[in-house]
Image (tube, rainbow, N blue to C red):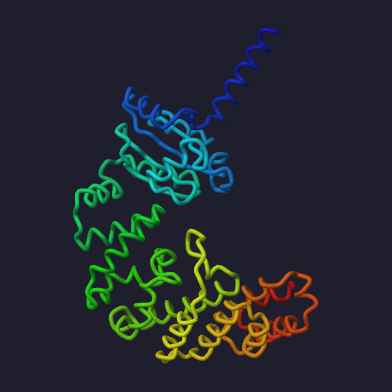
Length: 366
């Protein structure tokens, strides 16, 4: 009886262990991992993480522990986990331009980058991405090889910039984009194939955000861009940017760059925004001008003027332009929102106008 019970316990324990496998990560250095990969003729998978990264923790807990994922990675790769803020992490971060977390690197035993991708994702998506990267003819490897060999054709640069932004090699992507912008003639800048540098798309947060010369160039030549890329796309981009400028000024983001370095206030910048808007014939032109007035008031910390402009205009704004109220309300502590009669009047106007469903719902909750 005891022997049967012991055998059953062993079987149960074995089944439990088999169902709780995880990726086996080396706890050594990248150099040691490379030597191991050479001896075993395998690729190297590096999980670049930080201790404060939420998606990194989710991947470690819910994806790296799935049996199918663990079995595949343990069979095909030598795996290494590196904290980008400790030990050799900062050096590896600089070497491979790691600027977002988690970043996954696939290296060969010569320390050469074969593939990279970023972010938290479900296991099936993660597996699809890594299998794509194992192909030596994957897009990342080919474009890197062509660029590093000295090719600078416009077609290559377009793809190379995009893949660097997609892989969150932002500094590299921005530098190459700046060089590519300088290569283009005024006519070439207008071509639809180059709209990714200027338009509202997956790359715009890094290539044509506030302070970018690409946006300033496009806004100063908006009619030409509208003829070649469509008025709706150009108008939407400009509108979104002026809304974003106002939002960033109200919440304090405008005066820091992507790396959080301070940017000094420059009145001429806001004068240029005003001139750009005045040159348009947009239906909400007056509203956009008011948004820039709010932005400039916030820039010089004139909260009273921001409040006066909000109170006078928020009820007449379009639902889209009313989004600025989120940033405005964020300027105050909850007690101020409850007690300040002017803020309460602004909230009441938002609710009465009923133009922005999410904003109205938010306003009613205050």
